[in-house]
Length: 486
Image (cartoon, rainbow, N blue to C red; front, side):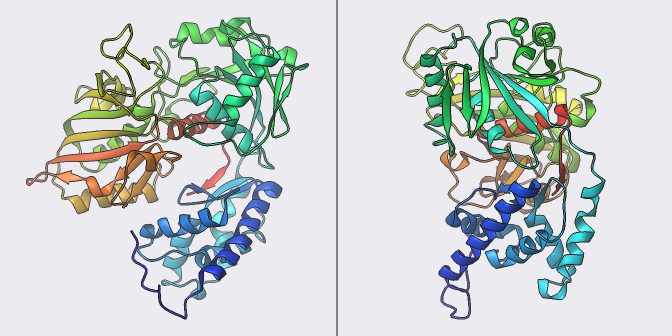
């Protein structure tokens, strides 16, 4: 909790004044996005299409990054001027801009010519390569597929990068099945209702999502769907089924007319396993056509392990994941191909295996053979926790290792992946809806007396957070990444 020293100070703005400023802020943020494709975030937290209360709370909860109270009156001047500073399609973090502006202004924006500051900081946006939007196909429409659909449609704006064109399922395409798919997209027990419209076009065999026509196609095998007949060309296909996991079977997608690249939303065999932000630059989309986004757990632990390995060195370690139950478990006790997963998921803690430990070595080779791992599935539907028990080469204390992790959430290549939390009461439901793949629970960090053994507690939304990692990889593979300022 951030201490507020001005609660009873009559010289400070009232809550009504903050609300009025937030309304202006929201109008400007949405106008920038819709008219120019400039998307503003606050320490990587989404600002587009948000309510007044959410905007004010995002400012308050981000105060620990500044070590002082952050208010709407800090960021509003920046947003006003960004409307005057012409930018091409871009994603800009107001939090980082504010930190740098305060540094240059010796703690006050009044000591800085803000417009010149913004022009200087964002001038590289004009040198960014022009984006050619790409078609996207979702092969499978389960938990990750539906969240991807929401995100893809939600980002249809002036800075459009990706165009969702089709969804492939095994079902016959008829009104009844279209209605079921539409309902599952509209209403979600975990992530809430879709804030948009979903209509059914039975004649076209399509869903009309926020006015965008998305074909629903039937297909059991990757090679049997003709996408070009629906006007889909040079598309990136995201396989969410989990049925095809090796290079040979995934390559069948490339035999279908209209598909150029494939991304698997699971660990893959014989294909690059990519944790975006860590090793994505090692694989050029110009040289390969099949990629894996690895697992949700791998995406949660690898960014943290990379930071710790680079800063402190890791001798060895064990990873225990406390994972939400998933659809591959049984609702009630029944036969299952894996031991223990047949027991009722909502009633039991279930010990099971995870490949996360060995998967790390595919992304960070220097940790090969140094990590063991296991998993416990627990009776929550979403929101998971990875406990990293690590033996280090260098000595640390709680403050120093937390400072390293906080710095990685603010600066460097992993700011999209790592979120640093100071919340004292953090629990699994608080993680739901987090776009970062790794949330550092700084209050839970434990360090041994000799400073060589640490326990790090890393939360992750195994659905929503992972989906955003898939989206980042998708933009990389499609070569439609905008200029970003983090």
